[in-house]
Image 1 (cartoon, one colour):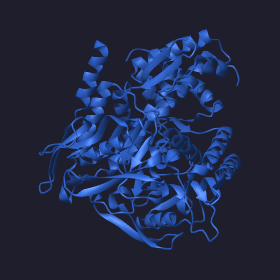
Image 2: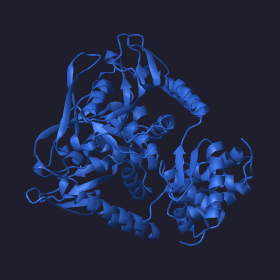
Image 3: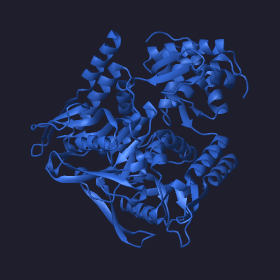
Image 4: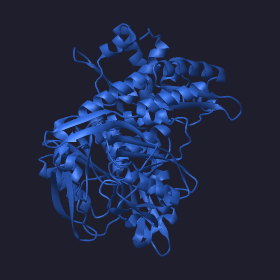
Length: 284
Length: 284
C-alpha cells in the first residue's frame, strides 16, 4: 500500500472505523497500514475523535498500553432521535394503516433499511455500555431491526421461530401463552445458535401484552443465559397486566379505532431511558 | 454548525457519504453544512474520491449542472471478494454442519451481520449499474442478506412468506411446485409491499432446484413488475433441470455426504459475472 498523506489517512481511517464498530483496533494496525509513525496516527485519531464527538457520529475510546488501541462506539444525536421518532409516529398515525382486527400495516416501515438502521443505531447508543453477546429476535418482522442493532454493536443474531425447521438441527422448544389471545403457542431456537452463559439483548418489532417476549425470556433461561435488555419498535397500549416488566419502546400506540380509522402514536419510553442512562454515566 | 477545517470536513463528509450510498447529494448541501465555498468542497471531494477509489471503498460520481452533485457507489475489491468467498467455502465445508436429510446448518453464517454486510456489498457492487427499485426475499433466512444488499443499494425490501399473516392486509398468493420435493406450496406477498412496474432484485440464502425462486418470479409477474436479477448465497449442485436460468451464486455446494460427513463447497458463478460485467462496462 502506498504511503498516505494525512488527508488520505483521515478518509480511509474514518471509513475503517465506521465499518468496524465496537472493535478494538491496535494503533499498530493503522501505522502498518499507512507506513506512518504511531505519533502521526495518534494525531489523526485526535482529529477524528473531535469530529465524531462534535457531530455525534460516535465516541472514540482510546485504550492505552501494549494491548491498547482505539474503539469506535456509534452514537446518535438526541435532537436527531427526537425528530426521527416524531416523524415515525406521524407515519404510523396514517389512517390507511388500519387493518381489520385493529392491526396496523407496518411493512413499509420495516421494509425500509435506512429507517431500520437509524433506529438500530438508537438502540445501540443506549446499550453501548452494556455487555451484549448476542441479539435475539422473533421471525419474521423483528429480524430487520435486530440486524441493524447487531451491526452497530458488532454481535451475532439468533432467530427464534414459531415453526420447526428441518434445516436447523436440534432445537429447544418452549410453550408459551400469547398474552393477547391466551392461546398456547410454541417457539423454538436451534440448539447451536446460542451458547450457554450468553448476555442476550431481545429486539422485536411489536409488543402488546408481551407474551412473545415473555416466551423469549423463558427460552433464554432454557439456554442458561441472561437477558440484559429488551427493545421494541412499537409498544401497544395494553389494559391488562403486562407480562414483561422491563422494556424499551421507541413508539407507543395509544389508540387504534378501526371504525373511525383513527391511530394515535406517541414516542415510547426510549428517550427517558436514554436520559436516565446519560445521567447515570455522568454521575459515575 | 461551526466552521470546519479541511481535515474536519474530510472526516464528516466521508461518514456522510458512507451513510448515504446511491443518493445524489447536491454540493450546496455540503457548502451549507460547512459554510465553505463550493470550490473548497470540490477539492475535498477530489481527495475523498482518490482514496475511495484507490482503497476500493467505492466510486464517487460527480454529476455536473444545476441539479448535479455527488453520489457514492459502494464497491468491493476483487482480491478481497475472492479471499472472503474462499473463507466462506471453508467455513461451509465444516463436517459438523451436516444435518439429517443432507441439509446444512447455516444459522451461524446467516446470523453474522458483519459477514452478511460483506456479501451484501459484493452483490451491490455487481448490481450498482442496474436499475433496482426493490429487493425481494423469502422469509426467514433470506432476510439478513436481502437487507444488507438493500442498505448498500439504498432501496426498500419486500418479504414473501409461506404462511398468511393477518397483520399485512390484502395479499397476493400463488401456488408453486417445490423443485426438490415436487410438493405444491403457497407463497404470498402483501399487496401494498410492491408497486406495479417495479424493477425487482431477488435475493435468497439457498437455491436447489430453484422452485422457490421460480415462485418469486411468478409473484413479481402478478404485480406487473420485472425481475432484474437473482442472487443467492449458496447454490446446491442439482442433477435435474434447474427451474431458474439466470442467477448469481456466491458459493456452490457440490457434495453433501451425510454418511461420511463430507461437504464440498466451491466459489459460485459470482466472480465470473463480476468479471464479464467489468469487461462490458469497459467496452461500452
